[in-house]
Length: 120
Image (cartoon, rainbow, N blue to C red; front, side):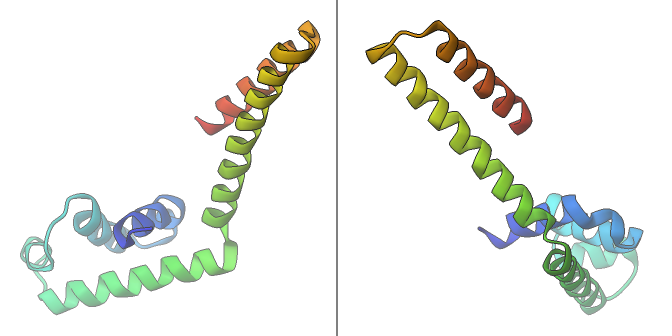
C-alpha cells in the first residue's frame, strides 16, 4: 500500500485522537498536497518544525494501529465480505446450471445484498 494512502487511512481511523494541530498538519501534507515549506509559511513555524510534527503524528497513528488494529480488522472484514459476494455468485451459477431451486437463489441474493450493503 502506498505510504500516502496508508497514512490517509490511519488518519481516517485515528485522526480524532491527535491534537488539532497534528490533524491540520497531516491534512495539509497528505490531503491538500502542500509541501513542508508551504505548511511552515502558513503556520508561522520552521520547515523542520512541520516535519517533526508530521513524523511525530505519523508515529502516533502507527502506534495506535499497532495497539488497536482497527484498520487491519476493517480490511479483514472487507475482504471477507468480498469473498461472501464471490461465493454467492458461484452458488447462483451452480444453482442455475444444476438444480434451479428458487429458495437457494433467493437466499443467495439476500446474502449478497447484505454483504454489499455492509461494504458501502
